[in-house]
Amino acid sequence: MFKVYFKYTLLIVFVFVLGITLHQLFTSHRSDFNTISRKYLYFFKDSALNNLDTISSSSFTDSDVLNDYIFNTNKNKYFITIWEFKTLHNFLLSEVVVNKVEFVGNSKFILQETPGGWGSTTSISIKYLYEIDGISLNISTNSKVISNLEGKYYKGFYGLMDKMSLIDKDGDAQVYFNFVKYQTPTILLFYKKHKNLFIILINSKNEFDKNIINILNLE
Image (tube, rainbow, N blue to C red; front, side):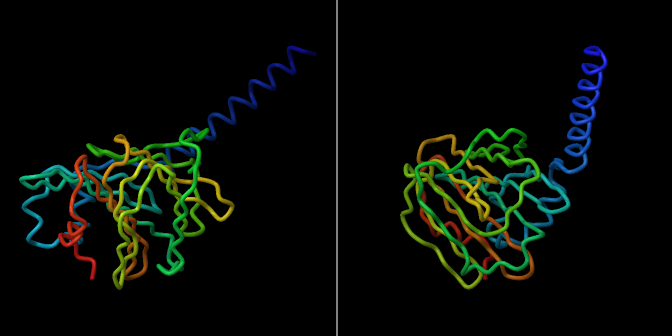
């Protein structure tokens, strides 16, 4: 009797693990270099294109596309992430909420993936089957917002970031941002001009002028 029970238990566990593996195989982020990311170059002004690194990368699913770029100047190197969320159609920039909390969320989800971050100063972890049902961002108490940034189609801030997370309506972390360097100089923008919502991250190992956003077409 025990042997039969044990065999059934093993079978159930095997089917469960197989199901998760197959689901992740077909729903997790896939990688691409220099193809998909080029479709998003319209975010950069023509005068900025020559300063972009020749290699760019993308991580994508049917519902989102995360693109990583490197922008070089004589004084600094900037890591730029442009992340499109294809399913967030109904949210308004006025609904963006930023909370400063001691605990921003769990950096080690039971099941997770880490798309993007190629050459970046930021590690991004995504909860398996993540669901963002609102535009709420938690930043750690060790993070510091220096100035708010707002335009017709974007809203965000420039600051020194330690950890951040996008949370759902229940306050559970769905996406976790961990900055490799303590208090990394960072710009975060929520951008929406047409149908889809974008998150734009700009960071560097060195402090920089917030006017770096002028290399982007945001209006």
